[in-house]
Length: 134
Image (tube, rainbow, N blue to C red; front, side):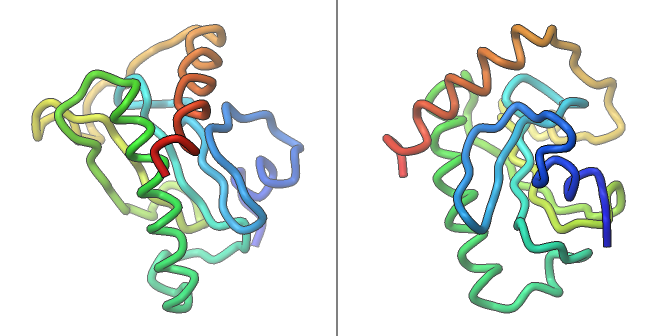
């Protein structure tokens, strides 16, 4: 199963990475709801999050937890929301979205626009804090 995420993992498509280990990757959504909207994926391709084995799913969520804490530490927000939709890309992924209101998690809302420099600065700021907040 090949997807845009498989190409990002392989380095064929660039991404604004915020955290990575041998099993998981977190990077900014390039079509974000807001500043800091991050996608967390397993490197092993699997279509649906709940097709993952229990240990991999648990480990992905712990990895996402560290990323979410870093997002909250550098993006002004009340909390970081979590969404699993799974319809856009056939590769399991978790959306981490900075929230100040429940309406901030509306995937039908117009998407935020940022320059490459803004994406890069945001990714670097979150990446610096992932280890600190983990």
